[in-house]
Image 1 (cartoon, rainbow, N blue to C red):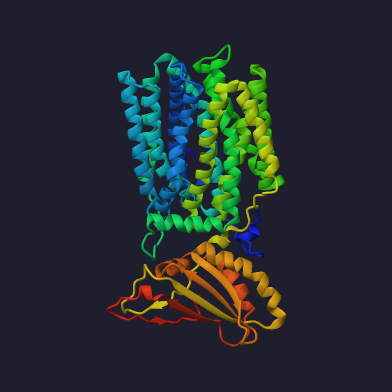
Image 2 (cartoon, rainbow, N blue to C red):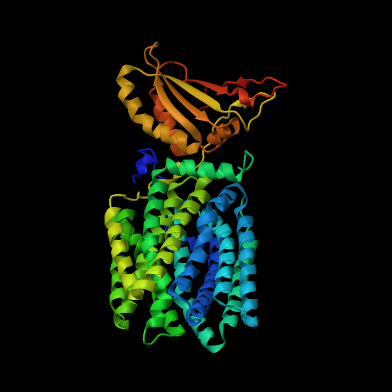
Amino acid sequence: MLTPVSPSADLPPGAPAAPAAPLTVSTLSPFAFPAFRIIWIANLFANLGTWAQSVAAAWIITTEQSSPLMVAMIQVAAAFPLVALSILTGVLADNYDRRKVMLTGMLLELAGGVFITILAFAGLLHPITLIASVFCIAIGSAIVTPAWQAAVGEQVPRAHVGSAVLLNSVNYNVARAVGPAIGGLLLGAMGAPWVFLLNCFCYGGLIWAIWRWRRDLPVRRLPPEGLFEGVVAALRYTQHSTVTRVVMLRSFAFGLSASALWALLPLLAHDHEEGSALLYGYMLGALGVGAILGSAFVRRVQAAWGAGGLVTVAAALLAACLLALGLTSTLWIVFPALLLSGSCWIGVLATYNTTVQMLVPDWVKARALALYQTAIFGGLAAGSFMWGHFAGTMGVSGALSTAGIMLGITVALLYRSRLPEHVDTQSLARVDSTEPTLAAAGFNTQHGSVLVAVEYLIEHPKLSALIGAAHPLRLLRLRNGAQQWQLFRDLEREGVWREVFLVESWMQYLRMIDRMTLADKMVLDQVRALHSGDKPPVVSRNVSYLAMNEAQGFSLRRDPESL
């Protein structure tokens, strides 16, 4: 399997403390939940098979005397579908049964693995066919990944999600430590076809674990979003969400430079005077062991330095490791650098992933994770191509050294783009809101804009508080689906202010209401508390004439309690 600012920009201040979890949260606490435990074990075997296969695939490319660019294209083929398709598959994961979405993608991945195995036994597996097969498998992975990431919160309670994300990263890196050694041994003893066959059997076990997992499906009050509609909603949310924007920016920049480590590692092993498939496996194993060791300290370091401090220090150390790998070929330096690189890698990626998991509401979580994956794998794909090209002109050592310098510069430039700390996540829980009543007359809910106006009576002493509350209110409306938003002062009636926002259609307006979280409600309650008068703010909803059925009229029954 392929494996997260200021919090006040998206969450209101003074959020209530989360209730105590029935089980003490620790790094290993998610194992107390059977669904997570069984899937984690099955995923471990699947990752072992995947990493064993990666050794065989990379060695086939390298021993065929392929160019450095051709070697790096393996990374490009594996990452490009995740960049191009993840947002679309994220829409599916947010609107349909995530278990079924995962099974669909996994069966496609298994079919690709079987195809590679057949080609290998037939002696027809060459660099071009291998890259094409990896590309097809990556399409299946693009289907699986957003649903897989978002489903973590369905396997454990929300308080344990951060630990579950870290354990999944540990799983991946345990396999990275052991899998390459298994792959190297099988490659030397039995040949590449048997390594590919082992991967098929291991991945079949994961499909079985997902198949037997039974989850409670969330109640959906509205029909699923269309692909285009869902993509627009995710992009609109991201545009007005500080958390997702900063994570995407920093993860893309990190992946662009750090990709040199993975893209050029086969060449680094091959060009060494002791180069062999076994050495490459040991190098990958060192990265995996480093990640396992680093995972034991992630929670402690984050508690001491914060999320922003952790990713800044880890990225800076990785930049130093890339420089070391580029400037020396001494194994006594190379292997410690790889161990430290693995620790830094898991620290950065686990923090980014957990940030998105914990600070994004459920209705858009798979899409937000998909956009994060798009950013990180976009950086990996572009970086792999770039470093492969540079390795062909300046050599592997020169390319690694340049990547280390570039990563160091990136850390300095993005230092002020701080990640948020994990605040109360209960404020992102969905809350029920009274929906407006729609009359039975002819009415097209999919077309014709909806203009909503909320009229407040604000006394002069509360005016500064209203202006201060306007920004979070604007972000709330725009994140949840409004196309435009404004706050107007009535020049003819003293103290009257109108919040006006435009929504694409009546169906989108209903989705806005359905997406309401506790954090959103707190923002609305803060604004309503400023309203004077015995009656609540007056709400008017106006539907464009384009939504009207020519054969019938339409009417709306106002509900002033529902915004």
